[in-house]
Image (tube, rainbow, N blue to C red; front, side, top):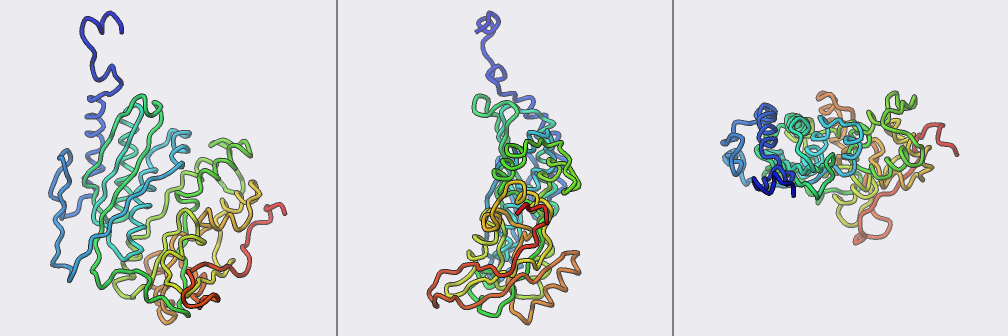
Length: 366
């Protein structure tokens, strides 16, 4: 303790927590937050809780659907680049896409940001990304928390997580129970890695290859950092538009575990998803990762989304119409497989089987 501290006494700021900086951050983020408000939002920024007036009359039997997630080690790339204005989109996407697959419309979102040292401009940048994700999803950012935690996080480190609540009519909940052999699996493209597999991606690019975030790779047409910070796509608006006209039987958000682990989560017993490899374009980052890391195809498919961010399962008679509706919303859509009876019987656990080959680039280095 210094002589000044002995004379005047310690303050919270001297302990590493700057309340004034926190207040500045709140002022800087207010515009971003308010830009997401829906008419159901009843509170302004700064209250102890966010109030949202659900119009229950719109639903016969409203069911609330919740989801929470973070961004994972993609945050490390943002820190390496000192670029924080898009990582919030990923946080929102990971939550709202998850509840979307059950047929829910996201209503509101809350974020939690923990920092080692609170820099108002950095916090405001992160929240601006959260707000952008909420605008893309059509949900309101009605609350959040910024926690300055010196001694727990390094000064430049932070973590962000989010929580969303949506609503769906009970009779319209999508749970995969009606999926049967003959149904078609449609794939909606990803923008790249989204927010999964970054521990392996960082190991390949930074540790194995010795690249840094500024390394320009001709195969990608951009720097490693630009590629790795590409935001996760949010599928809410186009898919909700389809749900207004077509009964979707099942959906899977392709996150950690890839197609291999995520599609079976929505399938009933006794069926398997037969995925036809090579039926959709692969973003270059996956071929580059496979080649540079000498990653086996099976490992690629169970770690990364490999170009498909959302799988949609519909009856064969509806597949063409769903594709048309998505195209009208500016979405691409590819038939990537079918549902079959399980070769192991009616009580067998659902699984994915692969047919064909992926069109990895010739840089694979066989």
